[in-house]
Image (cartoon, rainbow, N blue to C red; front, top):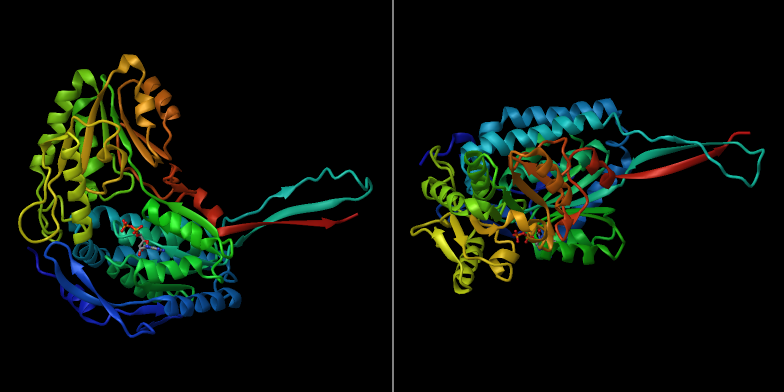
Length: 497
Ligand code: ADP
């Protein structure tokens, strides 16, 4: 295994504190919690355990920064340049951030370096441009009651205010970036609650914000647990908007907590996305795409293609192909440059995935490959392909959030595919493999999913909106679409006759 760089070793040795009002501080309670390396189950750092008292301090700092107009009052061009600088600094520290992400989350360092870090930089670069392009419109009125009266009406887009953001552990840096960049572009101030499993890269990002020159109090970062810090943020009466990414179960709690002051809520939740391979598909590409759609990030992706539907004529060939890829995946510690699949993030996650594997097999599913925990230290699960699965099984209905795909044949002639693919409480993403463009378009139109990939999977871009239908969430992340969550539209009407 590669040894840690001196920079990362130094970073994790220093006390890891909360960022409130531009200062790194201990939790009010003085408590800390352990951060675990999922490849070895060893403690790698101690982090401040923020709770309701720290959230309250951070919200006050964010409110003060909002009211001082230190951020929203900055010229859009200056704000944009500063956000751009954050993107540049992320790229400057890319190796270090990738290493930290791999150490903390378990993902292969090469993946973090090739995907998580550059995509995090991209969203800041993309959103930097929006800072100077948040425009209202002028609207001609038709009000009839005073025919002689004339009006000039226009809308303004204003920051929604103090924003609470709660993020998960599967892409810790990227999720922080997806959340923070649009909030900053629109002039909001933020309290970010990072996942307790993976707090390190967001803390490094906090340092980067300071280096870029983000004014004190504009971004506050709290490490701590969901039931304490997260719940306090979602319920806080002085938070104007809460943006949450995580499980559908916790999403529901966030919605309930937000009702007190009717704060705005956006949610990016779970999924059970279909990967669909039609008979005419380029099979080499389809098999590789379906495999990476589920096994990327150890299957810990909300949009993972976890239900595989294959035209029955090619079912065996596809299943064999996906299973062969699964068998050959090199598992190991993320920091090892040869590793293709790391451990799951935590012991809890390991046990969760293993209990699904057991329930699937009890309900009659058969593992063509994988099907169990890998022996030895760390939270490793074998990449698994399950067949003999049906829509009444838990492994087909529920999100596993691990490297487990359920494969099912369908009859193209019977037109049952759309019903099967849409038979889920979720609607986050879908993949289609076919050479027939009209089939691709027709199917893409019929699928209930916020994202449809054709002949590819997991293609993300800062400009593309991402989010879910049904219980996969409310609203969209990224692209122009996300800006509406962070702005209020004000209609101004002036009588001018
Ligand atoms: P997972 O089940 O994948 O760990 P969660 O939805 O539990 O995902 O966690 C995502 C984020 O939500 C984390 O930052 C976590 O601390 C936070 N969280 C967990 N429970 C709550 C809660 N009751 N209120 C607010 N946030 C929470």
